[in-house]
Amino acid sequence: EAQLVESGGGLVQPGRSLRLSCTTSGFTFGDYAMSWVRQAPGKGLEWVGFIRTKVYGGTTEYAASVKGRFTISRDDSKSIAYLQMNSLKTEDTAVYYCCVYGEVDYWGQGTLVTVSS
Amino acid sequence: QAVVTQEPSLTVSPGGTVTLTCGSSTGAVTSGHYPYWFQQKPGQAPRTLIYDTSNKHSWTPARFSGSLLGGKAALTLSGAQPEDEAEYYCFLSYSAVRVFGGGTKLTVL
Image (cartoon, rainbow over all chains, first blue to last red; front, top):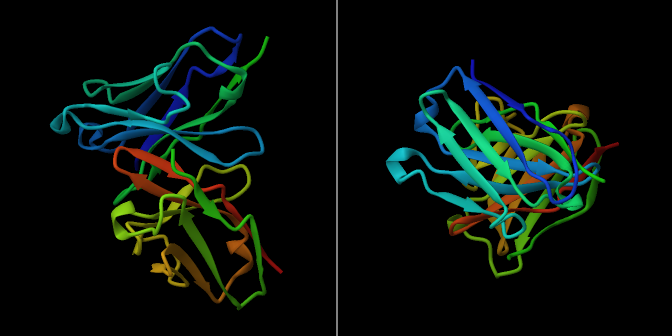
């Protein structure tokens, strides 16, 4: 059974950085693009970005709202995906999910990031 | 960035039929947008109901179907059940970028 567990969330001041991890098991991590989706409290889903598999160059794509501030990476040897978040803003406050979607559908339980002074 | 539009809320009677739609600010939604439909219940992570316009997962109840209708992506629920009450999100691909719709809160009443 596929499992995705996000960690690294918490309270952070505006302008600071935070790195989220998505630790996975139960599927061949290297075969799948890994995505991040967030949800502000009481709001809808927002696509953050994704990283392609090494076969497709391991390249990344980002939403305009986070481009230049957030970086997604992956460590296929550890089956972990990362979301490095820099220059955080109050509007980045959300539950952050890592996920794989498409012909398979795997989601973590989410980790809450609160950006506040 | 493109804007994806959905009905904010819809109500359907138990056993009834309802269609949720998903439009794009850039024009007609096509199969090239690879439309997805996600279902999210309170306190839970989302899960995919439909991908690539009309493909279902093993857990997708047969009463849900996806299609393209009048320049939009559509999710049709035929024979609504109380457990179908949830938020439904459309998701479209624009080349490299993906965009969620604002979600439709479906009430079964």
